[in-house]
Amino acid sequence: MNSQEYIEVSVKIEPYTEENAEIMMAEMEDLPFESFTEEAPYLKCYIPKEKYDPRMLKLLFSGLKYDFSVDFSATLMPQINWNAVWESQFSPIVVDGLCTIKATFHKGLKRTRFNITIDPKMAFGTGHHQTTYMMCRALLKHEKDIKGKVVMDMGCGTAILAILAAKMGAAHTYGIDIDAVAAVSAFDNARMNRISRKVETYCGDASLLQRGKYDILLANINRNILLEDIPTYSVSLRKGGLLFVSGFYTEDLPMICSVAQRSGLEYMEDDSMDNWCCAGFRKL
Image 1 (cartoon, rainbow, N blue to C red):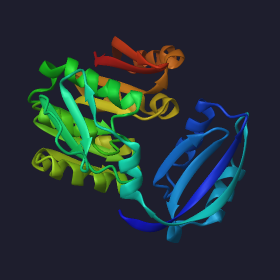
Image 2 (image 1 turned 45 degrees about the vertical axis):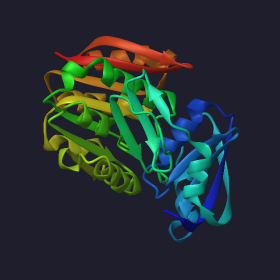
Image 3 (image 1 turned 90 degrees about the horizontal axis):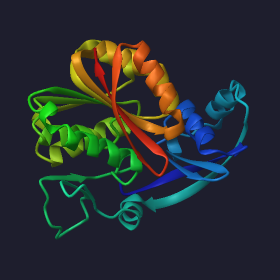
C-alpha cells in the first residue's frame, strides 16, 4: 500500500475509556475499516475512500445499547504514503533476546534466534503493543510444546504469532482474521519469511474453527470477543492442547478464567505489561 485516498472517521466516545474504545472496535470489525488508533476522547478509524458509506455507521450506531454515547465525523485524507507513515512510527523490537521483529525498511540489524520481517501495511500487530509482545513471550517459553504441533492464530493481523510458531518448529500454522486486508497481508508476510508452505490464512471468524482440531490456539483480540469465543476455542483444541489469550486488562483476568474453566480449560499462567494481561490454559 503506497499512496491512496483514505477517509478518517473520528468516533467521539462519551465517557471515553480504553474499554469503551475496545468495545467500539469490536462493534466495527465487520465494516471495511483497515486501522484504528485511540486519541481520547476519539477512536480514529481509517477506510479507503471508495469503501466509505456514512449510512453503515449510522445504522450500526443507532442499534448500540451501552452506557456510553457515540457520535462521528469524517474527513478526507488525500494521498497518504502509508509506507512512510509506518517507517516513521515503528522501530525494531527484540523479545527476551530471542526473537527480533522488524519491518521491511529496517536494515543492518543483529540477528537473534528467531527473526521475523513484516510489511505491516494497515493490519494490526507489529509486536510493539504489549499484548503482541507477551504472546510472543508465551510462545518462546513453551517452545517444547510447539515443535511438530498444529497451531491456530485467531485474529492473526500481520501473522507475527503464526510466523513465530512456524519458525519454532510447528508442523503447520493457520491464521484467521475478520479483516480481509489482514488475512492477505498475513500470508504475504509468511511468504516473505520463507515459511509459507507451513502457513495458511483465512478471512473469517471463530466459526471457521470447526474445520479442524489444533494443538495450540492463540487469540490476541479483546475481552468481549474472548469471553464469547473461548468456548469455541476449547472445542477446537485437542485434549491437552494449549490456549493463550491476550487483549484484555489484568482486572479482567478473573472473568477470562471463569469462562475458560466452564469451557473445560485449566489455568496455567498469566503475564502482564502496563496493565495488559496474557493468560495460558490447558484443555482437560
